Amino acid sequence: MLQPGAVRSPSKNVIRIQTAMDRATRAVMSRKLVWIEQPRFRGFGCSECAWVFNPTSAPNFELQRDKEFSLHACADHPKAKAPGALNTSEYQDWGKLYRAAVLESDRSKLLQRIEQAEAAILERSRSLSKSPGNDHKEQEVITRALYILNLLRKAGQEP
Image (cartoon, rainbow, N blue to C red; front, top):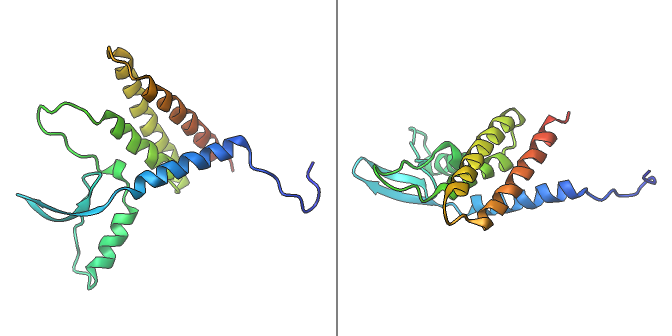
C-alpha cells in the first residue's frame, strides 16, 4: 500500500512499452519530406513510404504540407514493388506496421493497427523459418515485438 504522497514506480511492462515507443518514435523521426520527380508525379513525398502531398488551393500550402506529412502513417502508404522485384524489405514492411501500432494514439484504431502488425510479423516469421539462412536476430526482434503488441492490446482494453 502506498503512503500518502508516495510516488509509485512504473511497472516493468510500462517501462518496456515506453522503451518500444521511444524506438518507434526514433524510426518515424528518420523519415524525411523529399522532393520527387517521376514521369507522372512531381512534388513532395515521404522518404520511407508512398505518401505524396496533394496540395489544395489553400493560401499557405507549406503549412498544409508539413501538417499532412507529420500526421501520415507510413504503414497506410506502402511502397509499390517493381514487377518481378524480390521482396528484400520484408523486415521493413512489418517494422512499419509495428511502429504504426506502437505510435497509434487513437484508441479506436489501436486494435486494427495491432492486428495488421501481428499478421505481417507472423507472415515474416513463417518465411524466416522456411529460409535456409534463418535470421535468429530478427526472430528475437519479432518475439519482442509480438510481446509488446500483446501488452499494447491489454493496455488498450483497459477502461
